[in-house]
Image (tube, rainbow, N blue to C red; front, side, top):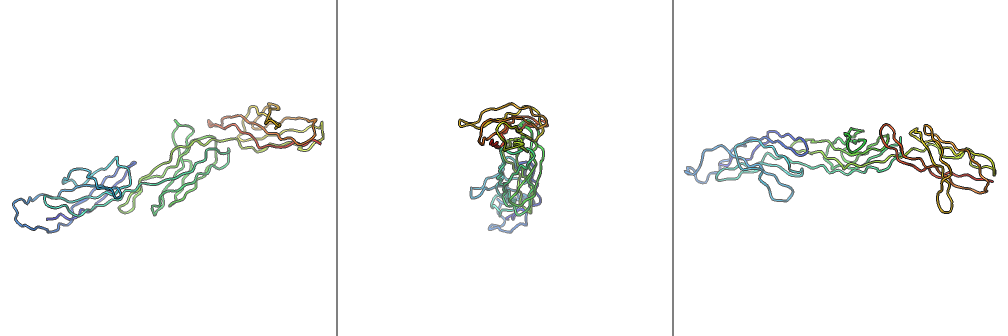
Length: 295
């Protein structure tokens, strides 16, 4: 007697790769070429849980037994689970199938952004034919806990965007497991990336960019966040950038009144040293060059 193929009762996925499956015996199929054989044993059906990855040979998860449930753990997603009915004469048809999918994830996380401007993270997940929850998580450093910064529910492509509050680590998490029918997709996450944040330069210019020789003008600087410290005004020469003056910076603003006795156009820039805001780092930043012309 062939016990028939097992019937899936239920399954539950949890964690990173744990799968609990329950099944029941199928309808028995008469298939006895020697009725009354004294070697026949009137025993309940036994079941052999198996899994197979792609075209690789199937692997037995345990010895045949009368148990109708199993918890599978520690096997990387990307396989199909099934159960065989067995007795002393026959191996029945496979049943109680569950298809366990890995979630493929690609994510592009920037390594340098500007304070207060968008940090944009893009990527793709494997197409599961349904929406998945993709979460951008952030933390201030490698020892602080992860928190959700924003999320999206794509079927494939995603774009996540948050304002940059300072240097942080980011990662993308695809939540899971998610189930549909007899299929399950486990979650995954990208590797952490440190996204360095530089100052946002609001203003870096001369109050009067064209002056007569000997006249005064002001080298103005405004940055965010509004930190205090000392900025360095630099001038470009043939050999490179050289320091002109360390200028006090208060609440993100610095002003240096200066004159020039040389005709021509010269490039200047400010160097703003690293700082912190709300416990997050702000990286040292050079402004774009700004120009002074003396007539």
